[in-house]
Image (cartoon, rainbow, N blue to C red; front, side, top):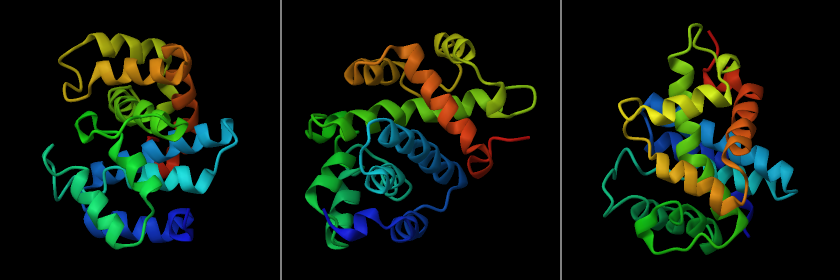
Length: 190
């Protein structure tokens, strides 16, 4: 593992260099928040895990197709000196990358990716637009509504929790609570 992988300021500068869209930036922060909370829970390297999550979609705005994302991003990170473990963790969040989710970090990143985006979407339709109003039952109810946040894969949310070996409701609750603790930075307050 190299030092740059644990340097949030450096990783944040890469994210902001390649990502200008505010929604994509907020998504990166939301996934980072959930993955960071799991790193604490599992007593893992908090900064390393957080930075993998922070950069998991950094190339998406420039390379939004399955042929390119996150493959192009991995190439960019290699040029910037990131180790294979870091890059493969990012690659593993895409089914089609061929990189298995065979480490705890890879499983956590996958489990948090779609769910963090979905919790954000649910927050935006709450009366006061604050994550404090989001509950597991409201997330589960919206998951059944295929027209709501239609691009979010419900299957990935379900399978992510299964791969982690955590009941879905418990996983949703854990991510909601993590996002509540970071709601100001995530822009999920009224």
